[in-house]
Every structure is written in C-alpha cells, then in structure tokens.
Length: 288
Image (cartoon, rainbow, N blue to C red; front, side, top):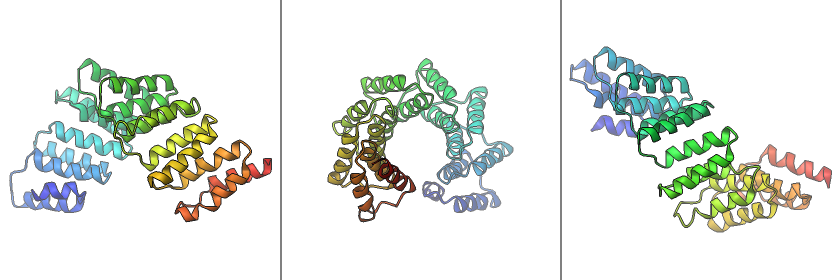
C-alpha cells in the first residue's frame, strides 16, 4: 500500500497529503490509515503531529487500537515527551486496549529518556506480573534505568537474567550492561564485552566506546588501549569519543607522551578533533 510505504520511509508530509486526499474524496478511513501516518510521525520524531492524528481519529470516531497507541507512545518517546507517552499508556489501561511488549518497551523508553527510572522499573514489574513477553529492548531499558539510578549491581543481575532466559540480546543490551560497570569494574566490563562475539552480536563503535570508557573509569589503562587496537583490527570506525577515552588511559597513568601520540593520529583516523581530548593531554603534560 502506498501509505504504508510512505510511512516506512518517514515521508510524513506526503503521507498526510495522501490521507487528506482520501478524506476529500470521502473514502472510508480506518485505523490502518491513521496508524501508518502516526508511524511516519514516530520515524520523524514529530510527536505533536502524532498526538494530533490521535485526536483526529477520536473526532472521526475511528477506534484506536494497540498499534495506534504503540506508534503514538513511540513518537512521544522519540520526542522526549515522557509525560504524554505515559498518559497514553494509562489511557490504554482505562479503555482496556490490549497492551503488548512493544507498548511496554515504548513507554519504558519514554520514561528512561525523561529520567523517570523508578517508573520504568515499575513497568518492568508489571510486565512480569502480566506475563508479557520480555525481549532485548525490555532488558536494555531496564538495565539502563538501573544504571542511571545508581544500582549497577542489579543492572548486571538483570543482564545475567536475560542470558539465562536466552533472550536474543543485541548490541544495545550489551552496551547498557557495559555502561553500568563504569567507575566500578573495568574487568567486569571486559567480561561482558567478550561475550558479544560468541553471542554473534556485531561489535560497533558505540560498544567499543562504552567498554573503553568503563576500562578508563576502572583504571584498566592497558586494556582500554587494547580495545583501541582491536577496533583497528576489526575495522570498526573510530570517532572523537573513542579517542577521548583512549588519550585518558595513558594520561591518567602518567604516560603523557603516549597521549600526545594518540592525539597526533586523530586526523589520519578520520576522528573529529575533540576539546575533551586536547584538555586531557594538556592536563597530562602539566602533571608530567
């Protein structure tokens, strides 16, 4: 269907025009048509338009279904509007609209982005109580919520629960678990990182960066630089965050010369120059 294709490509204006054309020609519209447009709103982070379409459905007496609510909550999450996302979730409950894994994940994501970690954890508990299927996204959001609230031990416990349940974990789940090790245990971060290859999860720039950051915070300088070498061997793209972590490793152990060397190769590695990198090296030189 044309409307679905436009929505998948995130072409919101074209999708809206297509919908308006149907309305002008008095075609009968149903939830399918509106859901497609709200889906396009999600892909373009246009949460206000998503809520507007939601209201248009109500005015036209078109019944909103699970897909409608899921798309609208996701749009609110992408737009950082956790209150509106949570309100839509509560409206689903009141109207007895069926909730599923996507509903909970989208609402948890909205709460997570709004720093409402307690509420995100409450939603996870509700999923358990209602026996809603838990997937990689569910665990990623829960682990991040625990990490942000300072409960790193519980965050790691949840990661291991996901493993035990044989959840199909992805790079985001691993990154969330590795991030929870920051400032606590660089070795633990590396242990989790080492599980990615056997799990056939693709190693990307973000995962390497969070692992390096955890090593630096945990005073595992050599291992942080080892990860930088592994990135080069695996042909994983580096960026400014990568080098910001890398230059901190030798700098913090007094190896300011190594930090300068790393800083000098940044342009050749196509990583953006970073104020953080320069500041770290200058600080190291002053101490050395």
